[in-house]
Every structure is written in structure tokens, then in C-alpha cells.
Image 1 (tube, one colour):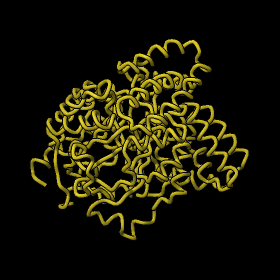
Image 2 (tube, rainbow, N blue to C red; image 1 turned 45 degrees about the vertical axis):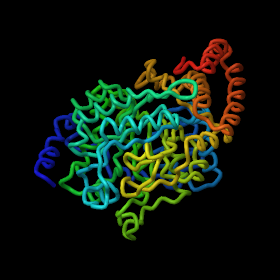
Image 3 (cartoon, rainbow, N blue to C red; image 1 turned 180 degrees about the horizontal axis):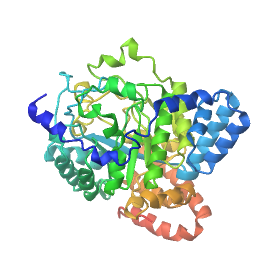
Image 4 (cartoon, helix red, strand yellow; image 1 turned 180 degrees about the vertical axis):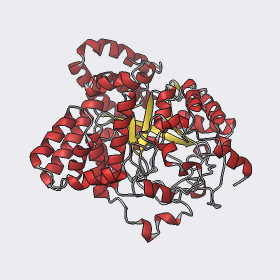
Length: 497
């Protein structure tokens, strides 16, 4: 590592910004306590399990002992009840909507050396780049003008070239791209960030530039495992600085934060307990839990033997266990959006979407700078390998055939339905009523501007069914909705309630 890079890293951490949240110098993840709870809640009484499921259905977070009890359920009938409850929770809070987005890597330079990651600094086979303004405009023009995305998650490596100043400028550039489409225009309306842990003042700059959710994954909540896979002397090697990133983000004024763990690094049961502890901690301190929770599984990455080394295979997450953990997370933190990514195969995504997932990426390309190359996938330019490379059109068509409407709505964020303001709306099912109207409007907009003929026909048929539901469930809003719908059909864009 160059001296200038080492000096940059040394300036990245200020313990005064996290020590005020710690108790006796300790963080809120107690490894032995979590292991004990999982152990002590084995063979849970069926009546207790049913009572816990009932609590989830009231859209209230579970306590750690309650989640630990559900983790230990082995009875197939009770597991089926849990799956039914997860589906019901998702339906109550989010209705039949699925939000789609695309990941956009803006820099794959990184000073960290995570053992499982293709972007680690010791990987000499990786082709490195930080996108220029011109590159960004080309990438976003493709995503908004040819594909039709309205949301992005932008991804930055931890490197001086991806400083907070670069982050600010790149976000402003993205928001400024506007592309003509068939009947209207394409533009990014919601931009979320997957970036490094920032200092408090830097998080404030992110808030000022108008980001949506700031997402940082702890990767693993197990302290010893974290230290093994994140070598000391690197920025990411500091467990607590990363753990308390969401505290700093919320303190800075950012409304929404996203949590996540990388499943396969340690026992999945421990990791979902860690995610619940993190959610509870944020609610206790700030009165708001995570806006989203992500649960990616470890995937192969270029020149990364960690994935195939037998000594690291102990915690591989099977498809069956993956299904279980998705259900458990939906029941444990019922208000949170849940993101299933294109790491997974189309078959896995199809199976798990009804069990509580609310967001997914589509037409994803994580080879830096490759969207404008018609989505070319290049393992020497990307962090890991994808399991689902279908186009957005294909994904939307498949979702519609399953009865899911693809929502491009970003109205809530511009109407103040964020942060603490949205929690009660989510828990009472009220947010879904706004979102149903806006989902149909934005879906019609996308169909008119981007859909293939086959997808358009399937999508319009679904919209007709949705209209009947709107007319039945929200009759007072139906006339106003139809006025907006007709305006969308005539080429107006970005209308919402």
C-alpha cells in the first residue's frame, strides 16, 4: 500500500463518533449471548411458536428469544405456518408490489483485502476503473433510456479515488441525466448508495445531495469470523467502525438505512440473529429500524480461492436453509423491505419472492462500465459472478405472470413518507394503499416506454385486474387515479399520489 493511501485510511476513523453509543466500550453484538439464545430455545413448544407467529402478523419486531425459537422449529406443519405468515406479512405491508432497481458500480478500486471478494486489493487480475462524468452519463443513459430503470443502487470501493467529493459529484451527475423514450423521458428518481463507512460530516454531505437509502453490510456479525476474513490494517478490518455506520448515517439526517449480511461466511442462524439485534439497536436509539435488509449468499469471484477452499465450506447455505432464513427475517422484522438479488438464479428468486421479498435487481451488470456495452459481463471487472442475467423486460414479464406488479414508484420519498414517518403507515397497512395507486401509474409508464409486445400485453392484463381492486378497495380515490392514468397514457410522466 502506498504511503498516501495509508495516510488516507488513517484519517477515515474517528472513535469519538461511535464510543458515545457503546456501553462500557462494548458494541451491541454479544456473540456468546446469541449462541446461548439459539441453544436455549431448542425444541420450542408449538403453542409458543404459534404465539410468536401471531405477533409477527401484528407487524411488530420479534425479540431475540422469539426469533431463536422460530430458528429451532423442525415440525413441517409449523414451518408451513411460518411460510404462510411470511407471505401474509408481505401482502399486508407491501401488497403484491415488487420494486426493481439496477446496481451501478462507479469505482472498483479498493484498499481492503477481504478474502472472499474479487475487488480485494491483492487481486492483480482485476481490471480497475473509476468512472468519469462521461462514463457515468453513458451508463445512466443506457439504464434509463433503453432499459427503463428509475432506481439505482450505486456502489463505491473504499479508495481515495472514490472519496466523498467524488461520491457527491457522481450522484449529482446521475440525477442530471434525462433521456427521451417512446412517449416520455427516462430519469433516475431514487438513488440509493452502497458505499464505505463514512465520517459523520461526510454522511451529512450524502444527505445534502439527496440520496435515498445508505446501505452498508456488516458481512458477518460474528467477531472472530469478521477478523479472519477482513485482514487487520485495512479500513474494513475495524469491526466496530463498520457496525456503527448506520448510527452515524441516521445521526447525520439520512432518513433510511439498509442492513445486510453475506451468508456463507458464518452460521446463517447467527447472522439473522445479528441482523435482528442491529434492527433493535437502531429502533432503541433512533426510533427507526432498517428501511431494507439484504441477504446475499456468497458467490464465486474471479481469482478468489476462498470460495472453493474446503476449510471455508462449513457455512455454505443450502437452498432449503436459504428459504428458511428469508421466512425468518420476514417474520423477525416485518416492516422492513427485503432485497433478493441477481446473485440468485431465476428459479430461486421465483420461489422466494412470495415469501416476503419486496425488491429485486434486474438487467444487472456489475462489470464496471459495461452497461453502455449492452450489459457485457466480464469477470475481470466485477466483484462476483451473477446467477440471473435476465433483462428487465423478461423479469417484469415473469413477475406479471406470477401476479406481481412491478413498481417504479418513488413518491413516498418525495412526499415525506420516509424514516419515522413511514413506520406507522407500514405497520397499519396504510402505505400499501398509496403505493398501489402509484405502482399502477409507474407500471403503465414503463410499459408504454419500454415493454416488448409480449410483456406489454401481459402487463396491461395485470393492470386491468389491479384497477378493479383499486375501484373496490379505494373507491374515493378511483376517479382521481383514472385522471392521472389517462395523463400517463397521453405521455405525461412522474405523476403520483
